[in-house]
Amino acid sequence: MRADRQKYKRKKRKIKCVLSILCVCAVCIIALFLPNSLISKNNQQIESPVKTQETRIYKEINQIATDGLYSSNAILISLDDYGILLNKSSDERIYPASLTKIMTAILAIENLPDLDEIIHLSEDMFQELYSKNASMAGFLPNEKVAAIDLIYGVLLPSGAESSIGLADAIAGSEENYVSLMNKKAKKLGMNNTHFTNSTGLHDTNHYSTVNDIAKLLEYALRNDTFREVYTSKRYTTKATNLHPDGITFQSTMFKKMDTQDVNNGIIEGGKTGYTEEAQLCLASLAKIDGKEYILVTANADGNPQTEQFNILDAFTVYNQIFKNNDY
Image 1 (cartoon, rainbow, N blue to C red):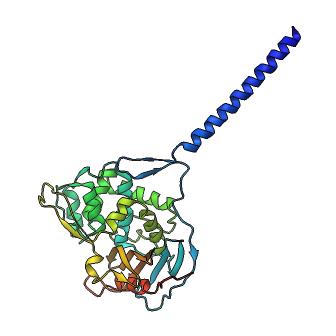
Image 2 (image 1 turned 180 degrees about the horizontal axis):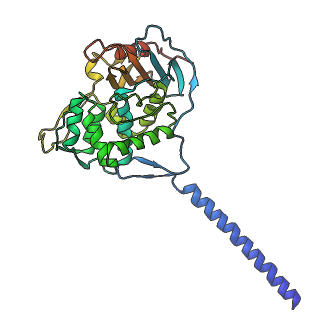
Image 3 (image 1 turned 135 degrees about the vertical axis):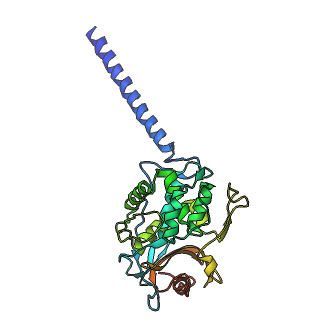
């Protein structure tokens, strides 16, 4: 009897062991095939807790000369291997002006479940923007606009009313939205950046660096919706209650350029910025010999009515990237 009981116990232990192994195998198989992310309603990737890093590791190459640039601050990054080809005071504090709207736009895209959602532009926001002579997309008080059209309004004509309309709709107020902007900046490793508004209007506590803006733009360009808007030359909105034919926007960069062409490539897109304190700024994207490059420049003399020295700097830099250049 004792021998039978011992035999039974050994058999029971073996069964438990086999079941434990099967359970471990099942967990491994599920983990292997479980997707690392979900897709939201507007087809944007929602990253899982174990996710791809949001910031890249860049390596200094400094291949392009900084001589002759009008901008006091500049950085050029290859998106092919994340090499820094040009670095001119890239960690020095600047006022980003409307380069701020890159953050405003990507945050809106990531937080809106439906980009066709209709957003009401309240009347009270406009008076202050008019008094500050903020750049506007052309929407009117009490206009009802699709969210995607406001995003185009943020990035192409640099509309302040579009920025605040999105901020109010997503976070309840611009102040709450700015809090989200600063949290996102910290997450992206933008350690020398602090936002106080969604528009880029001047504030001494609203600052960044060209290095940080480059990190932001590199991240934003991974989003297909952002990339499509950012690289558009023009766009016509859908009909609204106050603009039955819609509004046609032009990119503030492309409308100042005679050509997109640079040596062996083109300038694909860009976001301009200007205030008296920030001077002329530009965050642009170019494709040369099949490779993409980000250039962020700031603090070039001039204003929207003078020669566009920020755009001249872009052509100067991009034309120094030679064909089949190994670095």
